[in-house]
Image (cartoon, rainbow, N blue to C red; front, side, top):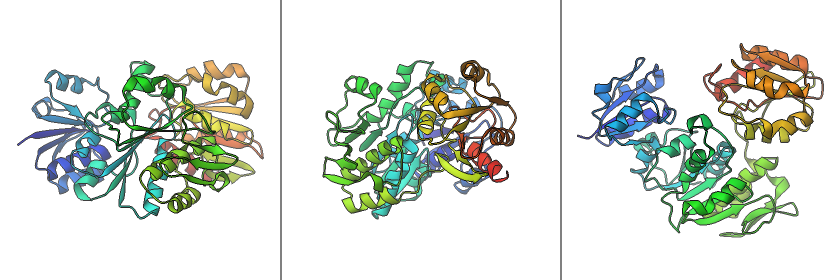
Amino acid sequence: MKRIVVLGAGESGTGAAVLAKVKGFDVFVSDMKTIGSNYKALLDQYDISFEEDHPHTEELILNADEVIKSPGIPNNAPMILKINEKNIPVISEIEFAGRYTNAKMICITGSNGKTTTTSLIYHIFKSAGKNVGLAGNIGKSLAHQVATERHDYYIIELSSFQLDNMYNFRADIAVLMNITPDHLDRYDFKMQNYINAKFRITQNQTPNDAFIFWNDDPIIKRELDKHGIKAHLYPFSATKEDHSIAYVDNGEVIIDEPITFNMEQEELALTGQHNLYNSLAAGISANVSGISKEYIRKALADFKGVEHRLEKVASIAGITFINDSKATNVNSCWYALQSMTTKTVLILGGKDKGNDYTEIENLVREKCVGLVYLGLHNEKLHTFFDPMGLPVTDIQTNMKDAVNAAYKMAQKGQTVLLSPCCASFDLFKSYEDRGDQFKVCVRAL
């Protein structure tokens, strides 16, 4: 019996373990941290052996025929290096799950906008009555759904980490929103390595497949010819550009291919330039999939948005509080600042991933009246932003202190924006935890 070892027992790992067990493999799961009670119960339900709370046991792992790695584990982790020395294949949960379903795969990646776009595409398909699953970075594990459910379509948000260990998986529709510096600490601080990871979403595509991308992104345009893309190209842009098949003209959203589509831009549920791109990418994906115009129009008009992404929390004493905790890189914060219509107190900071803050420098000067640094190591923020002369508060403790500091700094008619530019893992469990704590602290003011 072939032996599958799963490293990491979160949503991805436990889902992969369940699918492997259902398919008749000998399965073992190893996690150096404590496994969540819900995931432990799932492993017990399927009688899957596991270990937790201590270093990986080599003799239980290095006898594997194949290893499924959590995307959070870097490829240079000591155990991964030992597995590589044994020439044991290491794959992702998505790669594994793709072997056991014939469903259409609509896959979305990008440095920013991928969660909103993924959620919007799913909303369109669901509203149109399609048998569709939501997976990847959001939703339930793809592998677990493949093991226990049957869908005709999967809408999958893919991070660069997930793409790193995908080899034979094929996206019927691949969406690349943009590429800006992110996670460079995982890519030897080499931008090209990160770019190559993102373009892996197009690998294995055929001329019958679709590649949807932002036509104004300078990196994507530069890299297109390097990657031997065979899929049909569907470029989109804010205005009519060479080769763009989706754009806005005179206040009207237009999609030229494969079926002509139009609707008034003011009818879109999501506002702001970045959300226009999200809506265009989602509209093309649905159009290519044959969903009727009426369903696309309705879903683009009534979509409710994504938690932790420019989420209005409350207005207190005339000050608006916005939770953009999902802004874990500088470019995402740029979009948030660009959308601000009032003077803003910006809360930023966390685990720096090789950030270059020059991208938001002009917007901070233009829009911000104060900065709150929230993180264990704020030296880089001080070095870059302090010379601007804005009021600054340094918080190295908790969200409550950061919210209180921002509240004191802001005035009536202004906005407090949590848009951190950084990962959350110095003070929080995740960006969701960071955003949830922000909302609790705001509502307690």
